[in-house]
Amino acid sequence: MKAMILAAGMGKRLRPLTNVYPKVLLPVVNVPMIDRIIKLLKIHGVEEIIVNAHHNYQMISDYLKGGNPFGIRVEIRIEKEILGTGGGIKNTQDFWDKDPFIVINGDILTDIDLREVYKFHLRRNNLITMVLHDFPVYNKVKVDREMNIASIGPGTNLKGTLAFTGIHVINPEVLDFIPENKRSN
Image (cartoon, rainbow, N blue to C red; front, side):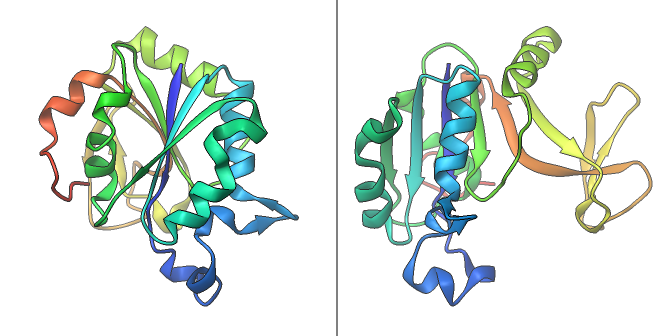
């Protein structure tokens, strides 16, 4: 199984800390966030990881050193300009094989069972599975009774809405619908 950690953002809401360090290298209880995410991915069966980077990308690259400290292959993909989530994933198209892959934001802390998320994705035969939860301040994903996404709206905390956690499983054929070298969310 393969995964991508989204780490290209500027981390504007954490300034001034992110003026010096990329958000994924900021420590949470003395452990950089990216360490926690790599560990989560590894214990749930991920064997290869790609990380997109932009802001202070050299620090991320130096820190990860090809994944050797983690006992897992980690590749860095530099974005000269920020391409957004879709554009960042499209920029890594050559990394993926025919199997679905996990994409996780580089700034979340969770103990979710990613294997179960992956199995759910396969059982449902989805093109994309987005992990949602109820967090009223950010609830803007409307779902139907079968938990299919009906819409993603501008308002938050509307009846029948949930929040996106920053974790998804994606089938590689979705990449054919994302424009190349363009910003895409």
